Length: 549
Image 1 (cartoon, rainbow, N blue to C red):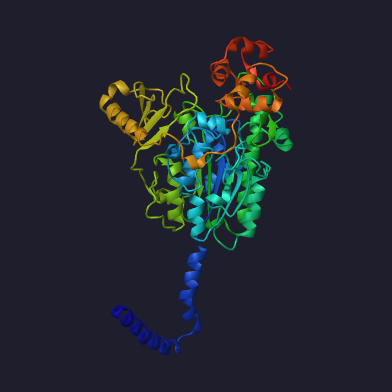
Image 2 (cartoon, helix red, strand yellow):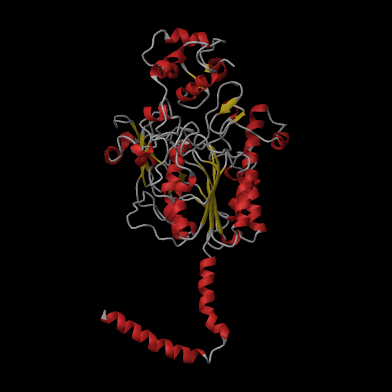
């Protein structure tokens, strides 16, 4: 083409002139542009996201806890910015993590609750794993030259699920996980920080991205002996919880110390958050708690005494105590140190576009994020989110804090709704952080507008999961499940344990009569059979009572 020849001819003339001129210049000046390009590439920030589990907003010393000590998180906050209006997009783990990974509402992928065994997933109209074709933060970063790794909890599938894609399908170069798929090698839940440190040392000469998703403070609580000894002066209930918080805080410190030792802390974005609010506290001890996904046994939910910092609700609630969580960001030279941002509404779906912007990574033209690029907030600028936020919850429904199935937030207004929108509560969060004052009757116009927005958004969600994300493993036949309703020598403890996990929908390690009846829907004499299992007659069926060992 003529323009190609003309361009090449011009380049040839310019090149000749440049070479003649170059002979008169010092070598250092000639190499300067190349050095600048190399420096620009080296200065892509490393990114580490430390994601805790069930860690409440109030479970930090810098958030005002009077009995929990978190010196490493407090150090992180003193060196960075504490975003105090950060929300996850679901009050339990799997969908919350889906939002982080994709930058999209988890309900768009039919991920409404935690990934359980296939039978329970299908009952909930859920897939058995996150679609590996979904947009993926690690994949976007990997394509831009980052080395990527995931260490710690996975739970984008379930340990009882066969055929689930492994982390590399989502864009990770390396991974050592627990709560993975059936047959996966399970990592030590206490080794998350050590694995992250090894990856940092091996990849310090190039930009890297690490998910360090720690176990604390999820049940079963498995505190180290050292942390238990440190808190032996507390009562047993608080001792266990303080010990696991200390273990989680120590993991943060281990990663921070490694960055400093390798000379990387100035060019690394470190973030800490939690996947939802704190777990509910059981009224009494129910014995040891076994987690088949992580293959560990530890203390049960009686010891889950985490704090919301005065926020209403806890894990599984769409009120702020279930979805507002800690979010601390340290990025020296970019993010203000020792600052508190209590105005920017930052969310899990904003992380993907914001981090890609920080890394100067262009997003695909066809990618439609539910999040916003809030890099300006990282940089200490006054920033307001412009889009509304939506939540859809299909799990626990109980009074007084677990009844909402939908929620929408626009600015400072947050509306809570039932599935059909007939029951609502309206709160103005800047004036009513604890959501104790329902002002829906005072603002019918706002209620009407936000209700319409929420219901129209819900109508855009898929009615069923992508069939490509369903396990092909053979599910238990209904007659076999029916046998679990009564004590029978033909039913093994292992089968009974799987049934217990499937029916225990709120994961409190107690099987209520309602949960038992739902699990064995349609069978006869269920109340009598339930009482037969309930050996101490307290109206609650523990795992030990049901499994019989």
